[in-house]
Figure 1 (cartoon, rainbow, N blue to C red):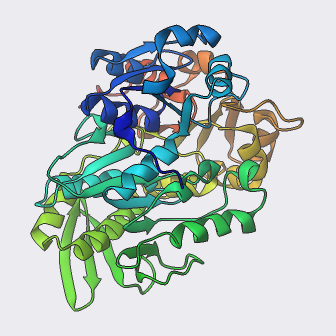
Figure 2: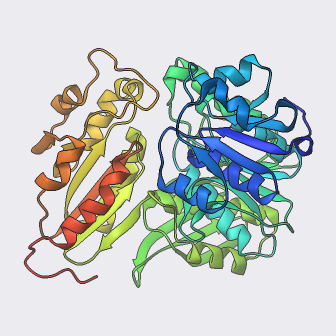
Amino acid sequence: MINIDLSSFKKIYFLGIGGIGMSALARYFNLKGFEVSGYDKTPSPLTDTLVEEGISIHFEDLGSEIANKMEKEETLVIFTPAIPKDMLEYNYLKDNNFTILKRAQILGLITRSSKGLCVAGTHGKTTTSTMLAHILYVSSLKCNAFLGGISTNYATNFISSSSSDFTVIEADEFDRSFLQLNPFASIITACDADHLDIYGDEETFLKGFQDYANLIAKEGLLVIKKGLPLTSSVKTWTYSLTETADFQGSNLRSENGMQVMDVRFENEVWNSVTLGLPGIHNAENALACIALCVFLGLTEEEIRYGLTSFLGVKRRFEYHIKSDKVTYIDDYAHHPTELKALIDSVKLLYPTKKISLIFQPHLFSRTNDFMEGFAHELSRVDTLYLLPIYPARELPMPGVTSDVLLAKITCKSKQIVEKEDLVSMIEIKDNEVVLTVGAGDIDRLIKPLKEKILNAPLDAPLDL
């Protein structure tokens, strides 16, 4: 564990400032009065917003010329593991002994100076941490929050309250980053194997989560989905929609266009808890948040209000069109378990509608590790448009392509489509749910696809 005084620096420089987690930290330090600047590979809506907030950003690897922009003694450099290790700026700063820390190490420092409420899990951590932050922020406790997505309620990934001792943090398992944290309390939503390029095998991956669970403060709490193979010496509460648990959800249903469930725990029964978000997985996320908020002392009224008023996270089951004719939803799912939860929820909400899914696989290694799982879940839709694999930080792997994946998928209507051709060739029909799904750059299709759907010659005009 590192131990440095952040106040000894005047400037904070970010390598990869446009990342969702990095940009939240940039906003934090900017609000604290530091001179914040950074590099990113390409401009994006996130970097545009940061510039509007007064943060200087450049998009060219300056190499040694970066020395003209900063002084070693007063500058802290924060980098994301997604930065290539051969990046010229990174290597110059490292070779010249600048103070360089990972994003996770900075979050660890922050959790040691506040009560960290951390949300970990292979799936669901972004929505759950954002939901938790919202419930707390609109309650008497308030909170600060570093989120892995853009909150729809606040249009940001950073929430600040100077009056609160609590900090909500998304605990990322990638690169073992979450082992840098000091959680006061934590939710763990799932520990299905992922990032095997980092961990090597499922056993080592699970050990990473166990090591994380062991970091929770003795006086704190672990909230864990029932059935996960993790243990803890601290107070532990389980939650589930389908099994007997400490916090049990039941009778999940739709009332007046909203998702509703009943909740039982200890000697209490909360009937008809209204959720702002649809989806089976979001009902489970809500149970986890209820448990942690009960532990923190929030009232039933505060928790109900927070859940009902929560509007979700950008790119997590995000509606772009919602009508009787056509529904268009965008989602970040990039693992077979996440695909299953998404498709299950769509089938529950729209049992009579056909599903057209546009999927962009993310990472060659993940596609290779979970090829059979992806094929199984994608076979469940009516029509599939499969984009080429988004490489992110990886080089291609022999024998791992979207064509190989497509051959294993059994739905009747399926095809490979280049991203730039998708909008022109997709056919929009009545009584259909259209989904764009993936963690790469598929979100750039949202605006043109939405425009095409709105202009589609359906049997009747869309009632939006």
